[in-house]
Image (cartoon, rainbow, N blue to C red):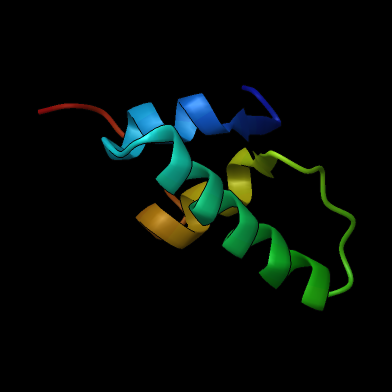
Length: 63
């Protein structure tokens, strides 16, 4: 399992543009920073992304 997702990966997962994916990452990282966590610009922790979008499910499978 990857620890971080990049903007192109987030864009593919959500079906949005790279620009929108960077917005999502910025917002998620801002939340993490407010909680006292260190973040990496342009990347978001996979576990946090899954928690925020899928309610903590580690992998989303297609039907």
